[in-house]
Length: 236
Image 1 (cartoon, rainbow, N blue to C red):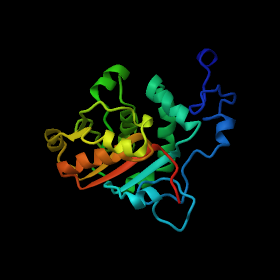
Image 2 (image 1 turned 30 degrees about the horizontal axis):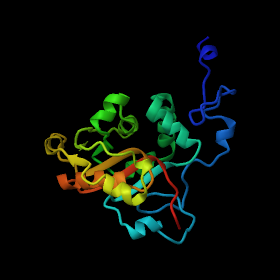
Image 3 (image 1 turned 90 degrees about the vertical axis):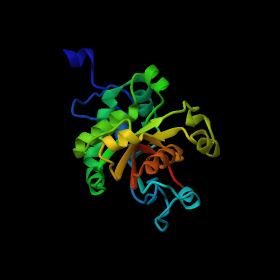
Image 4 (image 1 turned 45 degrees about the vertical axis):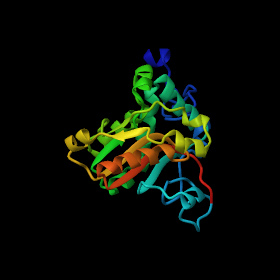
């Protein structure tokens, strides 16, 4: 009865699933949404050139975090799906991504031997308006997967900046300058971890991950690894 009133829908495009055994619709299953090699060894962006280890962005602007990884390519239908999670609180869509992380990225994440998991924070104004932080949804799922603690207060967003998607790459960096601040008391309360997995929903230019990494390393954290659900395409 419930399946009749609320038929299962595709977590990527939100269309009704006609086959009960499907996890995603046939149309979305034909699309290449998952990241495959070669990828940038630094940020994890998919690349076309097998001969180069780093994308052009990471060659020109080396990152402070140790390594980035992602699950999907940031393009439709993933963009629409993540927007539904972020702005409409469609948490059932997040379940699909976490299941795919378990299947495709569990071993890679386990090999990092991280101490704690930290979601990229949002400003308190956005949290009050939205009611949740989408990065926390994914970070919590990964924390349960790896049996590691998640901490949400080790780093704080102290400035409510303009949305990154409205800015060019140069503006994104300056927009996030001093937007994040580490919390020493919370860091000490967490046992002063040294290896951290930073989790976010989307990685494009990497400005957010960079800004948070700087704040974390100022506390004394030695290694920061970044995992995002979707990553924009790189350049050979």
